[in-house]
Length: 295
Image (cartoon, rainbow, N blue to C red; front, side, top):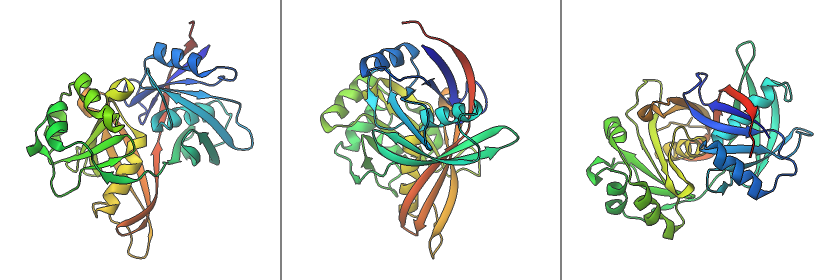
């Protein structure tokens, strides 16, 4: 099986978030894809189900232990690779078909040969977290005193999103993965996404970490699927200011620095103040290894 390793949300090999990409997955069943993803050991591996036709790219995503509906960094990695090999034209507008639905993807030219993928992220409901902070924070290695009480703790899909006051508190977290996964599982949750408005770069809007033991990932280095919802959250609560008459703004989210794999996710939110309607994530990538997986 031909396999490519791509680092997404960075142009530096070894930084960002690593994805496996299989461009010829036709004929593979779910069991085979899972076996490959487990062997690769990246947080996610993307499988291209058929050659892109009429502007449509069909993908499935697997962590080392489970299939998931959508993965931001593995999508960036796949579109980067397809553009790099000349399969997709840059610039160009395409459709992504995956278990989360049909999503729009735009390839934007970056420099003489590079590309940035802009992906509309799925919209999921925001509800109150079913797990109390007093239970969550000790399991991620923190305390309730670290929480930024000016913003709400909410559930979005299979994650709980927790705002913290300081970047040093975000960096200090050391989760107990097994206990965290066990506490989240009865509520259908897989992970905890923590973030702070205290950033490394003045041009960024948030700094984050994501612990996903429920999907076999102790810590996801740079998470596109959470960055889009975070952009919507920040716009809803007035941290990211949308134009009074409606429009689009862009911001940058930092992640991965705490574990030596820094990555940067561009986020674009469209809507009115307090009423975001759509979010896109943008990212570049770099091809690291091409080879053959024997299993």
